[in-house]
Image (tube, rainbow, N blue to C red):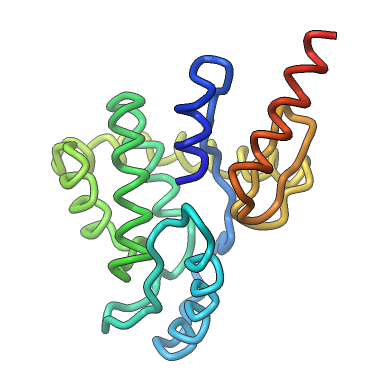
Length: 186
């Protein structure tokens, strides 16, 4: 939400590029109770201004097994264009953090694509056709993030030089962007 606001404020001067970071690179199922306990941590960022919606896991849906399926699905959604990816990304966030849906499940991801205005059938086909390329891209972006010092999400990297870890206010982003713009002018 904060990056959306920054992008709108700065227009063409700021480009937001979403990249993959694997919190859970391989399948590692956890029990529903373990996941519910983990999601209690979401209450802290939910209290911050300009935060998205976070709901402690309250459904009987199994927790996602790992990060790769949703990130690959994002790559497939991007083949439909930047706006389609943007809608899909917001829908995935809502599905996981607010609706407590299992975003490592292909049926859930296809439903999310449909909600984002992407044909579920075409989405599944593109995901299947591009599976290896999408997986390679996800792991390459993860390696790039590690090389830039990223250790978790959210993290923002400005100009491949400044790492802003964690959920920060829009004022922090503004300050870093202003400093970088001033530096460029010099």
